[in-house]
Image 1: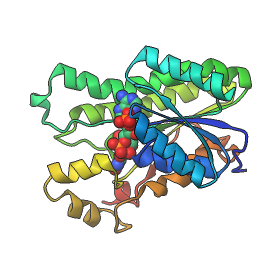
Image 2 (image 1 turned 180 degrees about the vertical axis):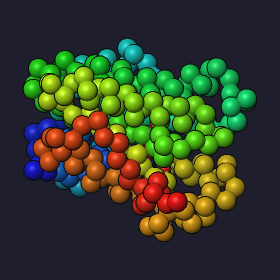
Image 3 (image 1 turned 90 degrees about the vertical axis):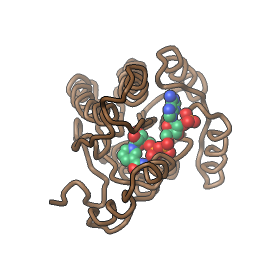
Length: 252
Ligand code: NDP
């Protein structure tokens, strides 16, 4: 039910943080993982790590904010691996500023990287998944898919949008046996949130206080949900947005 042997998974931003946590899960379940990101050295290191753990992996370069680059990634995946079963839209950035201080370029950069990217990759993957008669798309949202905050106007808009895109893709492609779901991570210890902790006073302790599990998440906390949503076990689940947050989102 959770066996991914013979399946090919593209993980955008798979060279670090949450993407690497998910890549570890998918490779551990037998998938051939394409680590797709910009920093080639970091991607090669991730591939070495996955292979050392007994997995099969390959690094391919992509800028998810660029349509041509996304289309080239999908072509290269098919050329090198011969199939595409699982797409994880994980690459993301944040620019923390009050709304009145945002430039249009900054707004565009966040929306392009976090939201438009998922549309571009999913659209590029669709013909292959449709022809194969199955597919799994996993989009990464956030607690900011549910909540807002004064310092993340573009990020929250992009992550709210990810949930609505997920539902729309799920509705459109259910007939093709393609399941599209979103994962909403809570506060996970990565480079992204290490910077947030430097920029936002009190964040470290506020997250601890607010999270019923009483700890920050680690990237391996995301491995299980990746396997579940990529595997046959989740074939009747589509359009869902599943928090993986130690209870952060249910705390009153
Ligand atoms: P990291 O900063 O650790 O990782 C971000 C990843 O995205 C890197 O692998 C980076 O690789 C890649 N990336 C960024 N921009 C691009 C681009 N234009 N093209 C291709 N790849 C790109 O962050 P996290 O692991 O924390 O975040 C991963 C996802 O999880 C994001 O979508 C984030 O919003 C989301 N998230 C994180 C939470 C957390 O607490 N950490 C909570 C909720 C959601 P490279 O630089 O090599 O391109």
